[in-house]
Length: 124
Image (cartoon, rainbow, N blue to C red; front, side):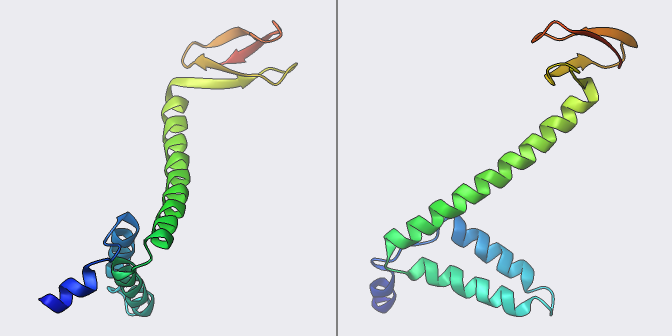
């Protein structure tokens, strides 16, 4: 027990990136084709957990969080646009190319651009 305490005394520990690497590694272990990358990911996650260089591991975590946040925002935008698509139709002003959002199921309507006051017809 004393030996393990010595190893883990100043180690970085398990963070979000290590958990994701471990989870992906375990999933990769299911297939024979992805067995080697799965083992590599699990070893890397374990190495990160016992690493003594906390500053480097924290920088890696920050880079991972940054990339993960970008991906999360893109999925959120896709979800938002899909929900908006069901309720609104988006028209583009022929004059100034301003995007205008109009409620669906109103039939043929006259749309007035708020930017340049150009009127044009559209069907929702």
